[in-house]
Image (cartoon, rainbow, N blue to C red):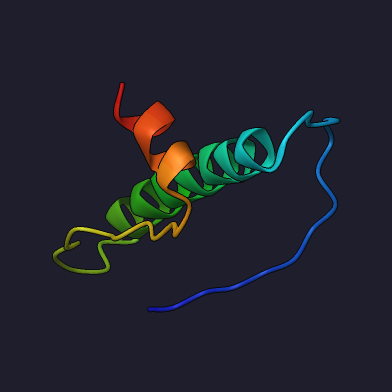
Length: 64
């Protein structure tokens, strides 16, 4: 499943890196919610989900 959505963020980011990191956080929460929903609906085996980001600084912060 592939999903893409644009939404105004509820925070004021001081940099592009901070904005992308916050967006990744929101997506991670939504993925967790979807996993739980699929488990409750007995939707089948849930495979790993990839969260893709092309900003190296954001990825570095997320890996810490």
